[in-house]
Image 1 (cartoon, rainbow, N blue to C red):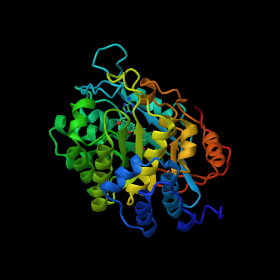
Image 2 (cartoon, rainbow, N blue to C red; image 1 turned 90 degrees about the horizontal axis):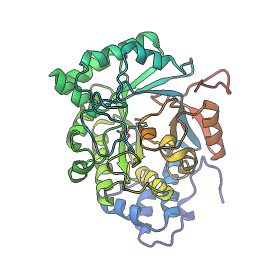
Image 3 (cartoon, protein in one colour; image 1 turned 135 degrees about the vertical axis):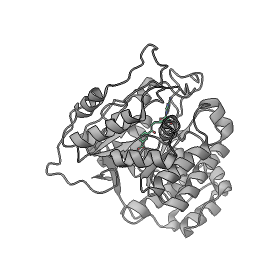
Image 4 (cartoon, rainbow, N blue to C red; image 1 turned 180 degrees about the horizontal axis):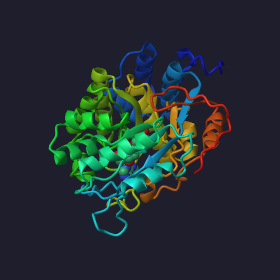
Length: 383
Ligand code: V47
């Protein structure tokens, strides 16, 4: 058997005890697009190894043996939020216990703490604050650019953009243009949750709907801002909702080509209004990565976000369709408020080790997937 990961295993080696999977596999090998029914089959097949084999085949065709990571820092300027989503443990009402809003100086200092020349990306998201003016966010970004000109700023979800646009009485393109002029280089994928209205009413009633999320992403891509996309799974959605979500993202990607990476996010119920729900299991997480890789044929990258799924499951996902594990993160808050037990950050050297031990070749990337070359392989980031 060929074990050279640069050469995806030959389709003739594919085996499955699930006869229904065969026609889906034939489509994958022929490079044909999978449809809604195929997506359901992949979610429901009891041959998870065969589903993973197919996803790995596509992943190795695209990326060979490479697995990407980056050296990034999360900054959450405020957790004050008017939305009160049932899915969320991070947001707080203004003035309530645990609510915080960073003064600009404080946010810039947070960026600098644990900062070293190693950081290539600031990932900035926060709550929907009822009073903070739009200028606060523009000044935040402009101040970061001034202090750390070489660091890529990936900031503000589509939900934050739509909220700030409404409060500033600007159109979405005007809002995005001002953000871009202030120094936003690209956008993270959060807030997409699940596009189904039925499910959004339960988990995030006051957020923009799925169409508005997609419309905001379309506007960002049109202005030349690349973005990521996410899907929150493992709460009250069903397989149809998941396939619908993925295919709606795929349709927009056909149109704009502006998405870089897809990140499936497993729901963490602790400290949320949905804390009666069980956590997802490793099998659900691994399958979600594989199905995403297979349905999102026009997305270059699928991320197994180690903070969310644990480093151990992320390693396995590197064999089930994922080519990226995210980065050092340094100070994760959203998942930790919801009961995540992973560390809040990881050293660069540990990311490299866990990718190597998954049998993949670690490649440090910047936000736009350009290789980062460093003089010292063992350079570490203060955590
Ligand atoms: O939008 C909130 C989700 C997202 C919970 O773009 C929760 O590179 C699980 O979008 N349980 C924020 N999930 C995180 C995010 C992200 C993470 C890493 C990389 C990128 C990227 C984006 O987390 C939110 C929401 O969908 N979320 N609460 C919770 N209790």
